[in-house]
Amino acid sequence: MSDLLVSIRHAKPDDADALSKVFEAAWREAYLGIIPGVTLDKMISRRSQRWWRSTVSRGRPLVVLDMGQGAVGYASYGRCRDRSLPAKGEIDELYLLPEYQGIGLGRRLFKAVCNDLRHREMERIAVWALEENGRACAFYAGMGGQRIARVEERIGGKPLAKVAYLFR
Image 1 (cartoon, one colour):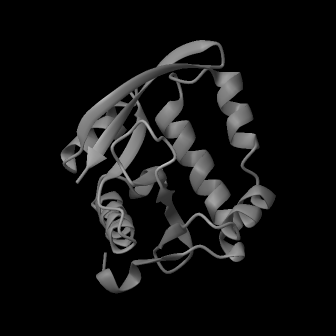
Image 2 (cartoon, one colour):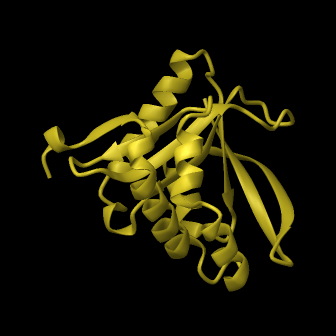
């Protein structure tokens, strides 16, 4: 895979179809068996192409990982929304199509987003992940994140723990 084919750019309304596909595939791969099936289906169905077109034009940054034929991953981020965390910035979501995971593209996207947040003077960055999503937790720990918080919430009637990672 050539570096010339990989770009990280701001999302455009034309990316809505690809973003919807990335979201669905990544969520099914990451959360099947963790989030109850009916709830997972409902959560995925809310993120239609129309939803993504609307989201692209909002104020919170949304970037895509483009391999030359459209988005195969994305990240949304901005100011930290949880005032209890010792962070100024937050990565809300970072997902790639399953076939693009495990080959360094997630690291590349993560680093680009962290660089942008730091450029915006948000040095301390938080990321939340479901604790049962071992792959995500291993990724953030491997990127140097320190586990700083744990909360439980009910998703589809099931208690699930979320953990926060801090990056300095």
